[in-house]
Length: 135
Image (tube, rainbow, N blue to C red):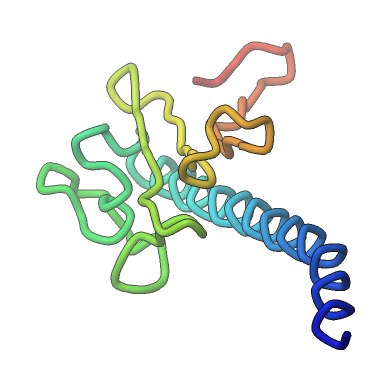
């Protein structure tokens, strides 16, 4: 009797708890992507460009060999963080370091079930007073 009541409670509460865990991981991924994006923006301020794709997010921790204006590290810690699902963040850069995107693909195996959320950040558009982009 007690086991059946516990089973009933778990069947009602379990999905809700799993939903909260998924939501918190997605929130953590958004926070980490914003932190990485802020670090990439600081890199841009010092170097006049974003890290190139081959340099990746590691350029936030150690200077690329060709940069003399690197003032990092731009992240705390010895390593670039992984997303809440244990996967590395994807970094892509285009136009010789003039744009970038940072992506967490979200929960593994959930790409097509409607619950999957991709978290990403791109550079903020800095606009002049007349509305044209500085970059």
